[in-house]
Length: 306
Image (cartoon, rainbow, N blue to C red; front, top):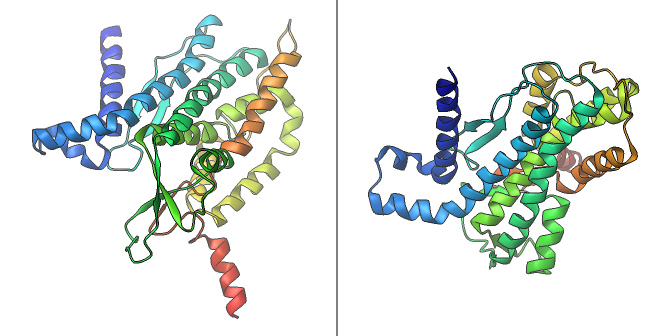
């Protein structure tokens, strides 16, 4: 039985690595592209897939190790391949097979994952941006099929610091694969830090504030809904959170012996505050730069024209 379980984990790990490496060229995995083309893709994209899968692995180990230390039954990571898309994966998950006993355990298990991925994603992004270059934007080029990756405050400021200052309307970044791995790692960390339900941010915020957080968490979700005015993709995430992840965290008792200490609270506040800097309002857009096709902008144009 264990051998079968390990086989599933290994298969998903390899499939996710290949799906991140080849993405829209996934046919190469099945030998449907010639060998030279496949090898060229592999060696150019390994700078993306290897760091990113390591970030995902470290994130899940940040949950797995505390769970084992607290003697909870927990699965190994299940990696989720997602070929034929710009990222190549939907991340990874572990399954905790018994209830978490108290809020101290909940905090330690919840904070470990995003802390690890944040620590690894930041240097990947910074080093990758050093390896990237600015290219002038040619207004005559048809960008209707181009993918545009949005910025968080952190990626914008560091990009301007390392490559700039530059005008985003005149120049674009020809991004190195390592920087893209860091960008995706930060995006996955930010999504996990959203303060709802069974997301890592939901564990952290509930462990810190306890039951009293239920009086205001729904208002925070309504504020989150407003992001769909910037990018429709957040409406899908709101649907997933509302129906599957849930807005409120299930009840977890306080620890019988220990209270949430100052160090844990400071770390929790830091992680939640970091969300403000790494969150990307419009992660990926097709044909237009992030925000240029937003519902909010369209409503503004409508009022101006009428």
